[in-house]
Image 1: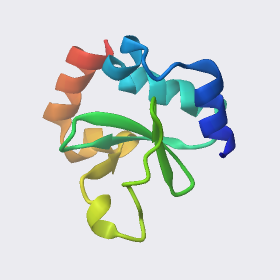
Image 2: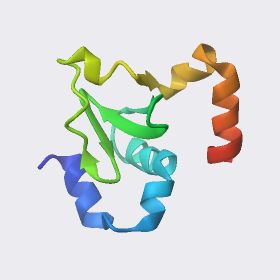
Image 3: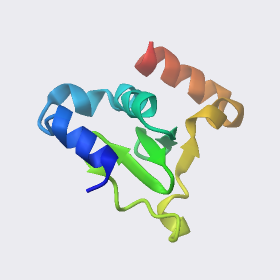
Length: 99
């Protein structure tokens, strides 16, 4: 188990309802604690934290996202780039989810 998964398991219960509905904030918690970036899954509408080539959310390491298999990450976008890619959707997410 890596440091990020240990952090998640030690501090958060996987059955906490607030975690499932607040994936952006959970990704921010991980970003504040570890080096990495927040990413957004365009299909799932889900925020993830990326550290090196691993993706995490409240459930831990998301093994299904693998940069060695490009088809598994083709729907992911770095959140810091998304405003430039689709400003209308970005603003809607900020308004409806983040604020």
